[in-house]
Image (cartoon, rainbow, N blue to C red):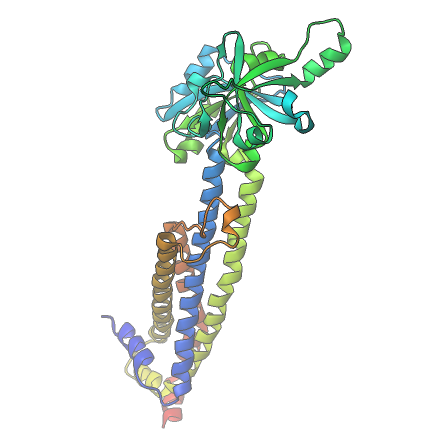
Length: 421
């Protein structure tokens, strides 16, 4: 081991003539450890909440969405769909039509409400994620059967309206949808045929409360007719085999699409405001908790300054033996690094242990967890966060040792020996 590191280690571990120095050093190490552990636990919990919200939203949102720059929509021609499916990681490519419509139900006229209607091609949907596996009552069927199209609603909305897909001898419920163009047509063309389109309830899905109470799915062509869009669509949803490929796929797709006609949005872009707020909360909480490490760094300055005063004779002896001021400075910088290594290492182990216990056993439950989809605080440990926290703590400890190291290196050898004598 290098002699500078040996001297630094001895200065930290040897008995003190003034016990207060040892206590301040121990407090410094404990402060660094506590700050690092708190940062790791809090960052892991905030990461867990971020991933939980992301996975919940992606359960019905796509990984990539292509929309028209103009509001009128666009034609989903085969060349466009083929170009989008050329990426090796693409699982599904699904054109859709989306708009708002008034849902009418004869049995419960008092709760008729506006819902978001999405027209989809059932054959192109992902059968492993989203609304298809989330259909818990009935089946996801929006095709036309016996001249009547099907509709799939959120389960909470269906329960409020007393709707069911039927079963046994009970027939399926029937509802009607009235779009804004249809309402306009009703008032401008009194003698025309009724614009109200009736649907047969085929299934009820259950994903997330807000989504379940406001969304309904019908066939793609039925939605085009309902919203009078002709053969155009509102956009195209894409799901990938790996969520981490979304940025690369967006860049690849943007190079091949006309930027004046199409806009490419990732899952992050679809809810950017929410995700940005969660990231801001994460780094804001990190900054506040990092103050614990900063306070510990001030203790390091005090303890190392007292060690410099106590070891002035040793500094003079080392200088008399030919040790340069630069190496004297490195001895005390090494002391700061040792304090940082011990404190950050202890905090890293403690933070990982607490995070793992929470992840494995859910020790701390959420207050009022009956109203949430999870029972305990979620945890997600990221290597980048661990490296940033421990590395920042170590660097701060070394910086805190700079002033005592500079002061020790600036002591003349004769003065140091005379004061020691």
